[in-house]
Image (tube, rainbow, N blue to C red):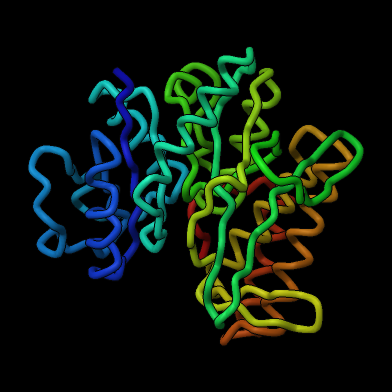
Length: 296
């Protein structure tokens, strides 16, 4: 019997939204593992019996990569074959996980070595539906994917991603040194290098907020973050550009990501000058391979 764990990584979560997420997942998975990176009040969580467990009760912020590795290990120890990952503000519908698993297993039955599958992400803020396209990175190019259905892609965001825990254990774990940002794409690139495929499907959609706020500048949609997050975004983009196995496509992806980070920081962040300063610091540290947690 297939056993699935839901992993929710929290950092000072909104109590109401987190409770709603755990209740939505209760009938869709066998285990719910909440990793507390800080600010979690366990008293706000619904009672789900033995199905719900808390990891990292002391609430130290270990970053998304380490949190996922420890939570995946806990899921395996509970006998789960699959894990599906969520941020604290994700809003999956009741049949999302089951539909992802069907697509995953259909591709496996066709002979593909499938590592993970993710839904199309939809942001509903501002009264419009913004669909985040998937991306396909090849040796020579990086392009958005607008095909309908379930297709091979090069990266998934962690939230909504359903992964095979045996692939996580035996092929590639999340890179702890990255802390946050690029963790998801890095993992997808690792498993692809070992002959596995990563799938994205427009057959399944999930409502998810991609940043604290979105703003439109002409034809561009810009994301709002704080200065600390800009540090990681810039640092890890430059690190992958300069120190990760090179391809033209990956270089394009890293450059586009870095350009979007700097433009968004300059135009929409509340603390713009501080954000830009952290972009510069992050880029410098990435060039020097100074990874790990935030360096003040």
